[in-house]
Amino acid sequence: MPRHWGHSSEEYVKQAIENVEAELQTHDRRLCGRFSTPMTSNYRPELDYTPFLSDEAATYYMELISILRWIVELGRMDIMVDVSLLSSYTMQPRRGHLDQVFHVFGYLKHNKRVTLMFDASRVEWNEASFAKHDWTDFYHGVKEKIPPNAPPPRGEPVQINCFIDADHAGNCITRRSQTGILVFLNRSPIIWFSKAQNTVETSTFGSEFTALRIATELLESLRYKLWMLGVPLEGPVNAFCDNSSVVLNSTQPASTLKKKHNAIAYHKVREAIPSNMMRLAWVHSSKNLADMLTKPLPSPTLHALCEKVLYLLKEKEIEIVSQ
Image 1 (cartoon, helix red, strand yellow):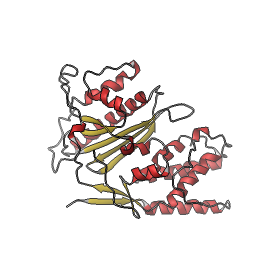
Image 2: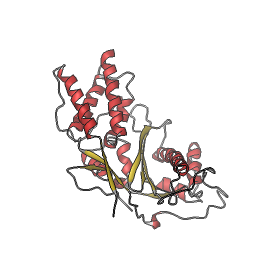
Image 3: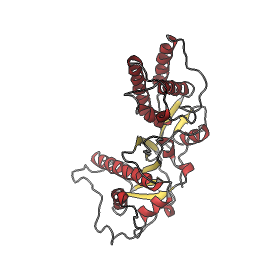
């Protein structure tokens, strides 16, 4: 029998909305409209040149961002990238930024009945999607770092699945890319990550490789933690990326890197594959669940991806996409 659990932030979201509406009423304003996306279409916070907020309003802005961040932690990854982008302006927010925060709350007001689903069943991946090669001549003797003092594993082995994506040069001012990572244990989402990259990458290839390197380090840490908790792991991580060039360079031993500044990310990712810590396959962009963590998406695309992870009570039952 399949095992499912649900986790809802509905009550917390409901109370947060009531508090925001109470504050808006003191200024003769209210949350209006049935917003289908967390932020206004085509809005870019870095291009907002409306007046700066007063000190009092800026403090309120930071309070609202803190509430939204907690809502994200409670499972509302459908607003994560929007909150991440708006969080960059907590030190000096503008009027337009505050309006967009209210827009996020307006979206939550009409989309608050959302449940994060945990499914203990495994995903049956197409094994042909994962390339198998002899890496002896390139990374001889490399092995995954398994803690020597880990307790004996108990229970059923768990499967780690990961989706990785990057929005190349998404910031119109700094041209930094946004990394998105979504990690599952079996079919249960446990980590959702959205953050601007620390470097400016000159190509989509570079930004995707940087995102993959960040994911590799995150997955190494997760596997180490699970080993130390005595959780048995089922083989390597099943990782998916929608950039075919990155997948080929990572999984083909004879592939060469032509861009020297990506060499660290290149070797970090490639070494994880022969060590059997991770295996990598290509996935179409429309099925890459991490896409919703890299940039604001149109309503149909956002909701199509969310339905694979979040259960909207008025919608059909979710199902994680498998190759």
